[in-house]
Image (cartoon, rainbow, N blue to C red; front, top):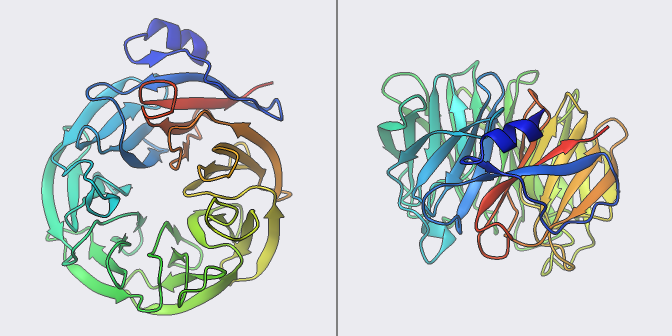
Length: 359
């Protein structure tokens, strides 16, 4: 049981009940991962390698990507060499992280992406994308051997398509001149052999966003699927052709009602899910058949949302104490859901809260 592992690995994990109240009994907090070093105040994206059972966290406070064992929560190594938390998130790093083949790729605040050996934590290559601000979220195509990454804080925002083959050639730069609030989470769909990239806002209209469809071989922008009323940030692939959009709609300053939207890869709206929004990242676990939402910006405080991927219904809302919870990842090995919390308001001096389904 994970709780017994928590107790036997006190140096790595602390069993703690954060101040949260669930409206359902199926997902509960089972512990926290303690992040060593400087207290975790700044962080960004997290990612689970399902085959290697590794959890990667973009830890800006410690200017590194932290690598943990999914099953024990123990830190395996730390990959330093990033600019860390700056006054503006636009220039901070690390940011997006993804495992591409045998290498870990992570975006930095100086418009570079670092290629890391995850076994040693050593940076083996640094690639400039030619922008002024941070490289953010990214996705990997194992068929085309490319990584797509977004410079969401540049004006206009753009994406870079870079080869994972030796030499790491920059294949294309895709500019989004009509995107007036950056470019966010991306996924690769093996069935369509396309990247899908969330575009929150088009031509200054908060209610008009989209999902860019990009060829992983040459970076061609095939089309942009229109998304209304969502202001999408998060994006994750669900069952079949479904994609869940993590909408910032419903957030404190969005001016839009809270919702999530499920679409297919051709842009068909499957369902609009009302009641919760204010999200950044979203995650999916096919073993539990659930989506998870990092809804940090809800007016009454941040929440972890659970959506049933079969019915596309919101089935659980877990109130969180604070801590800017905008990053979420899930493990298929033990069905754990990882949610980093900042030392500022997170109630744990900076940690990764762990949730799991309960019988």
